[in-house]
Image 1 (cartoon, rainbow, N blue to C red):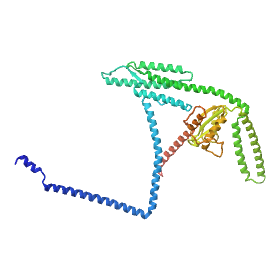
Image 2 (image 1 turned 180 degrees about the vertical axis):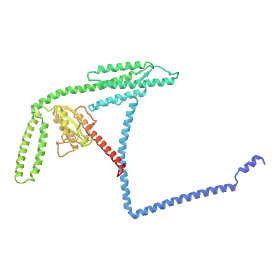
Image 3 (image 1 turned 135 degrees about the horizontal axis):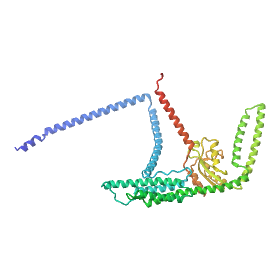
Image 4 (image 1 turned 90 degrees about the vertical axis):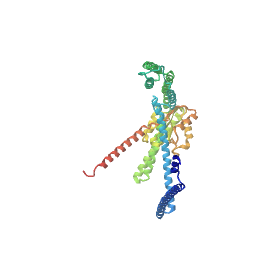
Length: 457
């Protein structure tokens, strides 16, 4: 027998060895299965014991009721969490979009609260086109293969750094030029922008880097858009003078502001109602004196009502006035607006007056537009949103459960084109929240420190 044959016989397993190995594997699997089953049986036994103890305390119906209640609680938490998750997702998406602009050297435009929604839409469109050009690499141009210290890659990095630097400088200076521009200084601002382009081109001569003509054209278009808004505001200012002349003539004819008379009637009637309720609790001479006072109050109300009717009839001769849509989230929450009209020479006086009367915060104005027939427009808008009145008993309360966007669409349907401001400043309301949170944090800090102090010193 050869050496290889002998080795093969030594390493080739016999039938007995194979059977032995199979028995070992089978035994191991059997023991593992028995151990697993015993563990499962122990778990099942423990669970049965737990259920039996639970059934001793509660019936099956009570347990099912508790489970249903727990399930409902989980569902409510899930629903509440979904709305919060959606808000956070939208906030994250918004911030990611803003970050993309900032990384590209475009700071978010700073709008004022009296900037129209149309301007915001147009400027955002301008910035979108600029961002696309920047991301495409066409906002700047470089006409050389520059090297640095003999390295082409280092030279390329330096050229890219120059491009980013010039672009950010151009955008930053553009914002300064735009903010200094007035309605009559567009040409001056345009020349400043042109000089800026030339100065940056000189700075980039070393690497032949400059702002591209296409990007400059986009910034010129944005500058023109801002200027049109300034011209629009100046035009509104001139129109307001003519509107005030009409309202002034109307005030001469009516003799007194109908809104003041209407408010006076309302408050006097409220006082009269309180006096009558008080009179019911009086007897003898006091009741007689209160009756005389009530009689005088009624005559005074009748006199003011007659004056109001005369003023109203005179005011109908000239029906011009302002339609306003205002909101007060601090007092009435979101989704509630007041739709009214005023013939004041300065319509904002009426808005300020409403905010100073009996509400904790001032109103935010969404639109304030001059119309030829203010009573008719006001009446049509009230009819449109009649089913959404907050106070369905007193129609003098002109509050409606509607958004400014809904009222804007309704006014468009009436053929009224006007400026709208959908953002809500709510300055006093938001500042009050911040102050309360600061006080709360301060108290919490004091309590935390005091809780760490020993009871006795």
